[in-house]
Image 1 (spheres, rainbow, N blue to C red):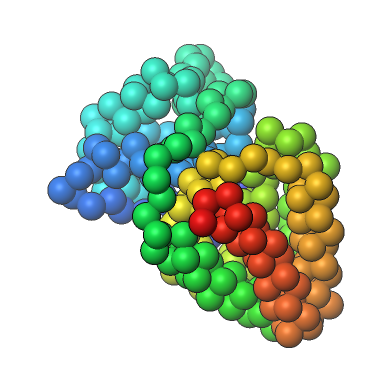
Image 2 (spheres, rainbow, N blue to C red):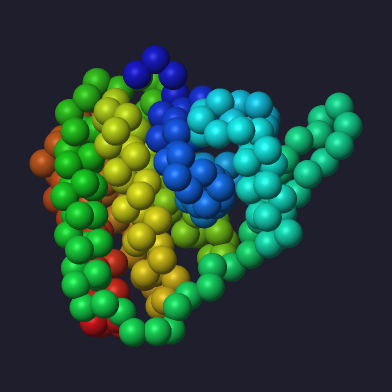
Length: 243
């Protein structure tokens, strides 16, 4: 990988989300993709989206479609447009909280999401640990972990998502990041239905450190084992609250 994932508009992660949408539902898919970049923290609160022209090119849609999607998300409180020399479209400083569904959960949905997550994330942790990472990549991974450990509770899910996607990015397989991002979006939709427990956050941070240390020391099996333990904790809570 030639470039560390510092700029959200230049990383493999953002490439996975800013990819062409389906032509049959161009507007809806553009809205969903932009919202996904906000929800997963690819473009953080206060940061700017790529320019409309760039978004239109990367999504393979018209600029009118991009403008309409931005307008709708602005009205919903996710984006804000600013004029002037340093203007553009920015993620709002306070992203609206996700609206968790209280309706019944399809019995097979939970296990489908969790099963795919285990396959993808264990593989990502193992593969990232097997790579020879550059100094920049190592620094980004450690920084992502420290950011997650030091954030406020209301920002935890975004930074947690960004850390997990960074691990996938370090594997160097762009299509893996697309799969991880889509799965993580589904995971977060489930997590939004249960309480955010402070003790679980502390425990997750300890597990994150174990995963990151195993990756940085080049131990694929330890990385996969630490990731498995981490995922099992989240899965246990989801099954307890939603099962």
